[in-house]
Amino acid sequence: MLKGFLQIRLNGILAAMIFAVSGLLSETPAAEPTQQQDFDSDPILLKLRPEGKAGRGYKLIYLIDAPLDVVWEFKTDFDNQHLLSNKYINSHRLIGRNQNEVVTENEYSDKPKLKFKWQTTLLPDQHLLNYVLLNPEECGQKYHHGYIQLEAVGNRTRVTQVAYFNFFGVSLWVGYPFRGGMSHFLKYTSAWEQQAVLDTIGKNEE
Image (tube, rainbow, N blue to C red; front, side, top):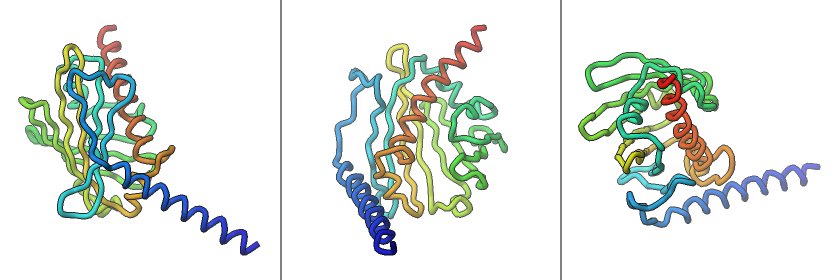
């Protein structure tokens, strides 16, 4: 019985190692899509490494079938309830705003007792949002920051999100290719946002 238990544990460890290694191998630099390339069906996900420090990162690129000004308004509506339709977000609230700096607080389904406080700096002329986690230690992280860039592609909007972060088990999360891993989470989130923007447009037209 003990032998069988140890074998199960060993298999689990080996599987985790394989997923971590597969994640590392998939970080080979890949060419980014141009604005003319069609990537409607699936988002583009590139794995990144922070410069000069431990941790991981990603670049996520996807299209939203809505004009730039509509998507910008959606992304900068910080006092909202539409985020709660995302299955990974339990709660969201606006804490404060000082000109182009906004502080919000989120509670996520995988960390239901933790309050993540985000500071977002808006650069409207560039359609750029820079964000940083203000309380990483409280949330079990060493750091987490990045940016979101919006660009017009005809009547649609290209979203580029870059993030860098570090926490215990980060390599396994980034490399795990199934439900619960980074790739699954980001693909769900981008698909959710694509639909959420369209739902918002529909409500405004009613």
